[in-house]
Length: 63
Image 1: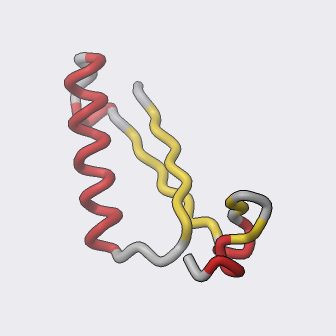
Image 2: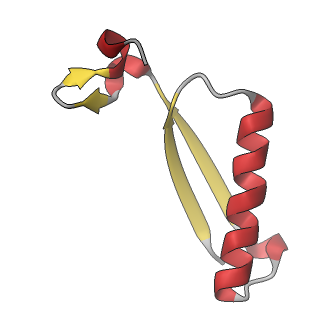
């Protein structure tokens, strides 16, 4: 059973997350041949202050 773990900075809409789940599921299905119903996708929203970019938090960078 393929399992994808995706970490993204908070702020994506439910629609965007659904699109990610759909596209990642399809990619894993195509790449591995696993049935779509066996693919699992977990999206983890990370608070901006917990995401570092070039030594600064994404919150400080206005991302």
